[in-house]
Length: 360
Image (cartoon, rainbow, N blue to C red):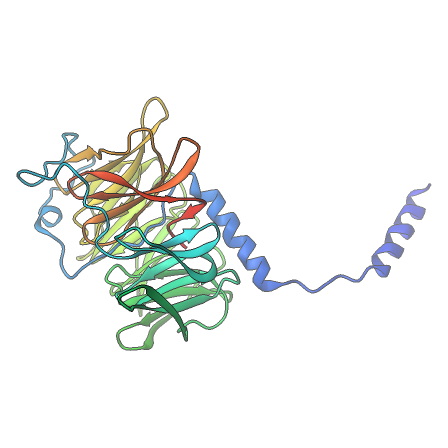
């Protein structure tokens, strides 16, 4: 068969085949999944539960490149048992949005989900299977929890969505690469920025939104843009809480910066990939040791030390549930489970297994 005959045959096949239109929602979902796959091995995407002020421990800490390696000292006479959960927490289990109460009751919220964005005392925000942001009102009837769907402030599918640590702001990037910030207290959108297809929405707060892409990390607000250092390659995982930015860099360190005044000031460089604590005063990290085993450490602004109670557990994901509780997803004896650690560095199992994801 000659080259000309081959071309003619292929042309005939092309003309005879109907090409279906591109499903943009499904395509964007696959793009997000690929981005997560490429970054899951080196970064943790966390939602920091930030409050009104930064504690003195971080605010007065000298600018250093290495923290002290001595164990974190807890309060006098700490408990020898982990405190467990103080409030209901949300996560994805086996592809569905789930809720776990402090007493151990596990609920299926009732929606296939890509993950939990965040929650308040009354509502939970999640990404559904079509990449839309859904909202459920949470009520405690005394006998059980109920979950009622409510209208969402987000219309259409999103590439990425984040909630601020103080649970006031919701931010998302739509499929046109426009970033929106919505004030949940005011019930209105208060910021809109044009991004590019290379940008990745990392975090949101009152200061603005963090956008990462092509090795650059930028804190953007209306009429302002401030670059945050990123080492070793693109920084796709960063958190923002009350003037502090935690960047999980490609060189295996989590760097904490103070961005409240002028240029970013380095507060600490911690080993591993981390999540910024509830008031910015703590950072929890997953650290690979020399034997290529992973463990969880916590830094309190002065020193860093390993948590206890996770012996035999391989941690894979962290999330601060509230001001005193760190959630850990990890593998043990061939099963993925959920654990809770308190600020005394004590951890315990939450009796939840399955295919778990803590973040959207």
